Image 1 (cartoon, helix red, strand yellow):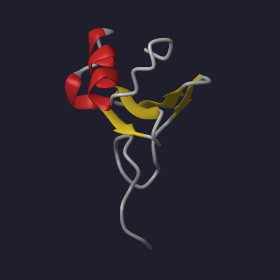
Image 2: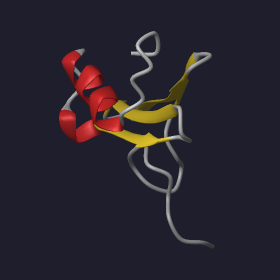
Image 3: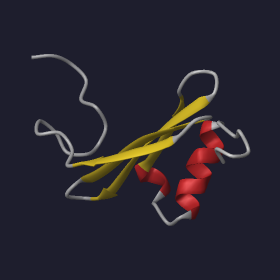
Length: 79
């Protein structure tokens, strides 16, 4: 997708679900005019993969979720 310059969040989500990740556990979003970001909840533990794709690179980082709630999405609210 990067080589084609395809930075459509829906296409990114489709590519990730095509790899076997469950649709309900994959999020993607526009990240500037020539980039897309994504978040995947890989396991229920959770194991999370967050990344970006733009013209220059593809990057992904794994992390173990957030301590104050289950899942991979950034918690909302304050202290």
